[in-house]
Length: 468
Image (cartoon, rainbow, N blue to C red):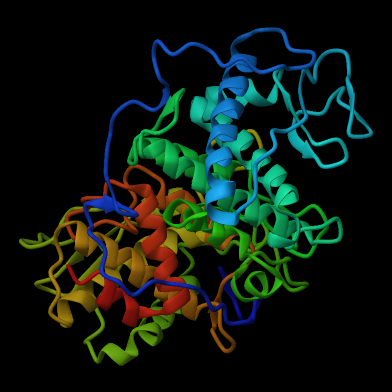
C-alpha cells in the first residue's frame, strides 16, 4: 500500500470483465471441487515424441508426456474453434543449463534456466537440469505442465496467425496473457478427465498451478510496457482463469485494448519510498497506517449506510457469535474488529531475499478489510457463515482494493500489492476468503476469482453474484 501523503501508486481506474450470473459456490467454473491426486496418471505408457538432446530422465519424460497431451488438445481445438488444422511443433529440445550449451533460437543454452518457444524454427526447449526440477520440487509436477502448456500457447498464437493478432511487433504482455489463457484452456481439459497422462484436482491441484503462476510473475515495479514483460501474478492468474472458464476463442480475443483496460501491473512511482519494509510497503502497526486503512474502508463502503465497526488493537473480548481468527477477528454482537498487532506484523513484513517472512502490507491490511466486509454483510442482512459468505467476503475485499486504485485515495495501491493478495488468497488459512469463523472457501481458484470480481466490478456485483 502507499500513503498518498508520502507515497503514490497507480492512478488509473481499472475496468474489467466480471460476470453477473450467480455461481454454485460448491464448484469451480462449473466443475465439482475435488481433492484427489494431481500429477501423472499411474500405469500410462510414456508418449513417443522425438526430442533432441534428451537424456531419457524423469524431467524429460514429464516434459514429453505434457507436450504430447497438449498437442492432442490443440489438434482437437484448432479445427473445432478456428477452422484450422494444428501442425505439431517442429522441434523439441531438451538441455541442461548446468552442462554443455545447445544452440537454439540464436541462443546458447549454457546457464539459461528457462523454457521457451521460438517462432524462428517452431521449437520448444526446456531446461531439464535446473528449471524443471526446481518447479517440481517446489510445486509438484503440474507446475512443469503449467510452464510447458504456456509455451505451447505461444506456438498456437503463431499457428493462428491473424486470428490471434500476434506478430513479431506485438508487445510481450499481450503474447504472455494469451499464452497464460491458452494454458488455462488446456487445464480445463485435464480437469475434465480428458488428458491421457495427467489428472488434476480442482481444489489443491489448481491451487498449486496458481501458485506456480505467482512464482513466475514479474517482479514488483516492472512496467507492463517493458519488452519481455510477462505479467504480475494478479494479471497472469486472471488470464489463466479466463482460459479455464472459457474456450480458446476467448483467449484469442486478448488484444491491446483489453490489456490497457485490465492490466494492473505498474512501475513504482518516483515517490514510492522505502520505509524499511521494502519499496511500496508501509509499516502495518504504525498508528497512521491503521488510521488510513480505517478511513479507506469507511469510504469504500459508505454507500451501504451501515454503522462502521470499531477497530481495536486491545486484547479481544469474549465473543459469543464470532470466530477467534487472526490477525483480525470480527464480533457481530459488538460490531468490533479486534486486531492482533504482532500477528499482523508477521503477515505484513515482506520476506527478504533468501529468508522466510510474511507477505506484505496489502496482505495484512486485506485481512482486516475482510473482517470489515463481514460487518457490511451483517448490516445488510447477509449470513456470515458458509462458503457463500466467504466468497462475498473475498469479493467485497476486492471491491475495497479497487477503491484504493482511484484518484484521491489517501491509502493507495502500489506495485506488487495485488500479487500479495494472490499469495494470501492461495494460503491454506486465507482470511480474505473466510467466513466469520475463519472457515476458508476450499478452492483457491474461486477465492481469487471472487476477489477479482470485486476489484473490477465493485461491491454491487458481490451481493448479486455471491448472494448464497
